[in-house]
Image 1 (cartoon, rainbow, N blue to C red):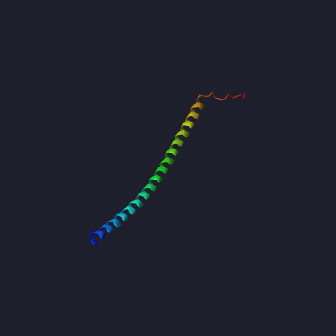
Image 2 (cartoon, rainbow, N blue to C red):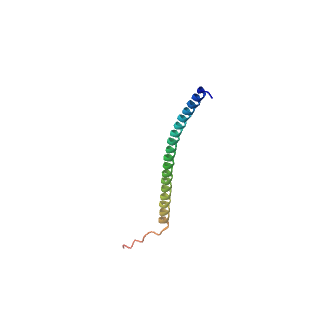
Image 3 (cartoon, rainbow, N blue to C red):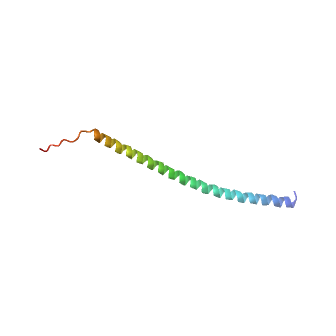
Length: 76
């Protein structure tokens, strides 16, 4: 190996190292965005679930109120 080949090999290694650093930075950024979106979806699904459960509870309370006898009016 001559001196020129060693120089080019080191230059390629340096360029690859820079590319790897850039890709790692991008990967970290994308992972943070993914985590943030996943957490947001969890909150959204949880919120939708809570709204659905609340609506079902309200509906069942309303349905049971319709089937219960009306209070008697004892005033004469």
